[in-house]
Length: 445
Image (cartoon, rainbow, N blue to C red; front, top):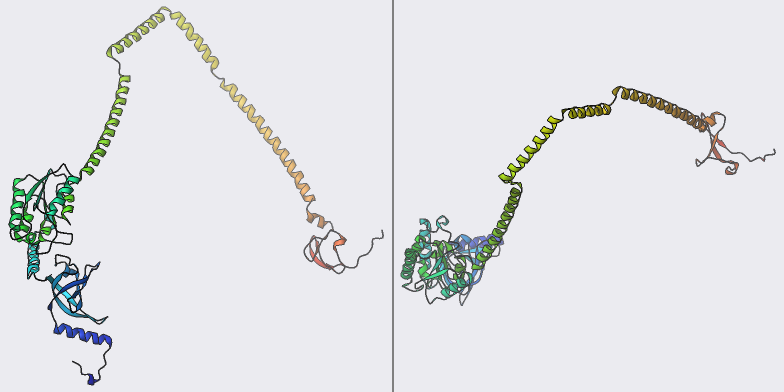
């Protein structure tokens, strides 16, 4: 403790830190009973809420790794007992409880039993995902383990009638609450597994408190669910209710109705798939038959019977025999025809020597024509060059003429463009000079 007379002055942060250490030392861990209010579950998984009674309230936080072990999601207004450490949130100077564990008020150690058994069975591997099985997608029959008076049974049956009326349903009745519930569930699960008349088991019940659902946390029931020879879908309670049977089951459904939806495919979906497959099969069969028909038509067109083929061969052989006889009877006529064809061949054969002479003559004519045209073009080019030289202004300047420019660089073409005293520039063939215009004189000639 610090005496005010000592003169020590704290900053706000130092004061809050000192108070926080004092609270931690004075209240290392306490049990607090109260009602949940202002409950919020953050995206991080942490729980933020207030604990209140008729006289006061205190803020509390439960971090994600601890919240996972609770096995349920608390609702505002529910009474719990909280194991917590008293801490101070230094940035605001607010003190709060950091909750490490919680249990329902009035249930004694029931929740602690839940957590201990959960850790034990988890360590044994009963909840491992590797041992879970996929339920049959198209079951012949589905077994339901529940009470005959349960509302969950009516919901499941209504869902199955709507989704899969073709699936047979077998009910294995059992109490789902009370002292005899655990034994009843064991007997029902054993009967379903032994009789082997269903493909999937639905373990269902409506919502309730932890005490109401405790039979589904019984160690014998949980082990029976894990050891079932048939896949088990657990649909116990509402979405926020969690039992150990949920962890041991092959599939956990949020509600009994959801369990019924997960146990088999809907009839309408199956019919739609069958119709699509039937359409595809019909299209493939039609295409296959069309291709086979085309191949048959081509083969039929190419197919000739042996009798027809022999008749064609006989006819061809007879024709060849007749031609041979005609040739043997008229050898002279054949030789004469050959001579005629030889003469026609000689006439059609070209005279290569004459063609070579003709090509040489044409080449000479072409050469002479090119030389003549080239001479004409040269003469024309010479004439154009002379005309260009005559029009060259430099040639005119060399004959004694000059170009006159004014100060703005414009060519002076007449006396009317010149004022007395105006600056001029004269260009001769060999350079330029500057000059000044004098007074005008009248031409008396």
